[in-house]
Amino acid sequence: MSKGRFGEFGGQFIAETLMPTIIELEKAYKFYKEDPLFQEELTELLNQYAGRPSLLYYAENMTRDLGGAKIYLKREDLNHTGAHKINNVLGQVLMAKKMGKKRIIAETGAGQHGVATATACALLNLDCVIYMGQHDIVRQALNVYRMKLLGAEVVSVRSGTGTLKDAVNETMKEWTRRMDDTHYCIGSAMGPHPFPTMVKDFQSVISKELKSQILKAEGRLPDAVLACVGGGSNAIGSFAAFIDDLDVRLIGCEGAGHGIDSPDSAATMQVGRTGVYHGMKTILAQDSDGQVQPVYSISAGLDYPGVGPEHAYLAAILRAEYVPVTDEEAVQAFEYLSRTEGIIPAIESAHAVAYAIRLAQEMNPDQIICLTLSGRGDKDCAAIARYRGEEIYE
Ligand SMILES: *Cc1c(COP(=O)(O)O)cnc(C)c1O
Image 1 (cartoon, protein in one colour):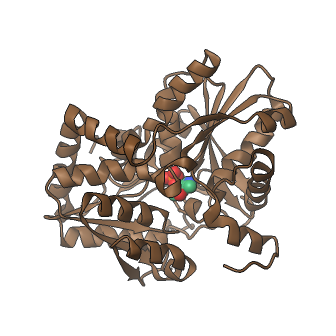
Image 2: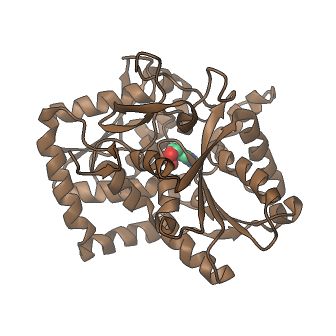
Image 3: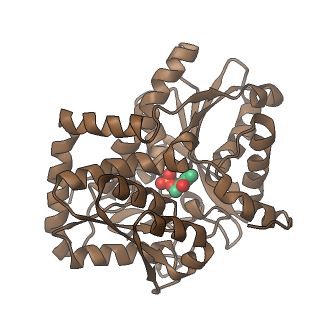
């Protein structure tokens, strides 16, 4: 059980029937990670299809306006499908195809990971089935249409609260029923080993590019790297290349909803405790009986009751900091970045923008903040308008 551990976190807490498939996946991943042909093909897809490398943009207006540290934005919002998720999905789907799998299954909450997975399956010609909570299917009708348009089947999950955590449970169950020809393409740096490590590696392209881009622009490393944290994939991908650079602060921004003292928050690191869920040991939002609790954030992408196990570890050893950002702060940052830089961020990413606004003003003009803009905000405009009480027609 020491495999895939990050300190006491991580591991493989799965049904025995799934063990052979997980072992097969581990072996395949070990092989393809070192396979120059696979890496070359993946790089080709990332560059020619997803549009990498993504820009590192100097946010000059924002920097001037705040009067503190220089702010750079890593523009994952410019990737094909509008977010960082495509980095992981292209990696996993390409690998599954090489393993001889014919079919990809995945969970989705807001539908972003489902759309990215359906996109990669359309491109690489694999069958695709997306599991989505029945509640989310109603809330995210447009993304359901997108997935179907891309050729995927969408299965409604009726168990539990009919949301993301139930979709993960159901996808895991379906994988147990049908392993031979099917790969489970998990959407964040979570779940049983090897997923947290594999997803981190696929998302590390963010920090590898970022490191060389900032060295080129400034001749030195940033003082802080910021990213929002749902399951934690864009954050761990943004942190990865800097973990050994101890002078670089790593800061994960969680969705605090109505505040960490209210019952409506998704700031797992603030309100959670150690437990086991979805195949991993990590920090989880739980009630006093240890039942995993539903969480809340205005941002559907941050609305997950756990966090990837490596984040739990980085917090425990004090290598990374995790800070809560409320709905209201995130919405203000969403509006601020739109107005100041002409960039509409995903409401998830706006949580990191909100913290950068606070942090920059406490820092000096000779210091540097790099923040990952995990996605674009077109998808959020209707919800934010509603939040502000504006009438708009979708
Ligand atoms: C899904 C999503 C997130 C949250 O997922 P992580 O695994 O924590 O990165 C953040 N931003 C956007 C734009 C997303 O679509």
